[in-house]
Length: 161
Image (cartoon, rainbow, N blue to C red):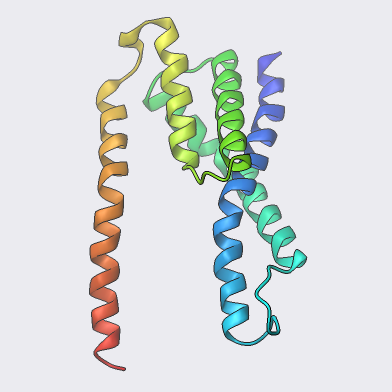
């Protein structure tokens, strides 16, 4: 039963992913269109940009995201269908709620936290805390490392302009 319900929970999670992450993509596309004068004098996000971004990100999550969830569901803790359904549903509610509140959150954070939560209900030792810790370190290091790489690229490109 829960294996089939995971199709529904994955679809809702995909929708939440599209609602959350599509905003960022829409902003970049709209800014590019505006900077080229393709939006007229007033900055706005055309409905076709909204629809395309929501659709593409949702489809990407729906058709490729299950692999990530499957990997995380075996590396962090072993999930059964009921646990997978619970984790996806919790992550979907978390991301949709945050999005509706105007708070951009990481889809990876929501699903990882949900998987750890499900694994912890069995027993704390069911969670591979070393794997979870590595994921947390990756999150912490992402922003400063990306900032350094962006700075280096900018300085390199700017020296040729």
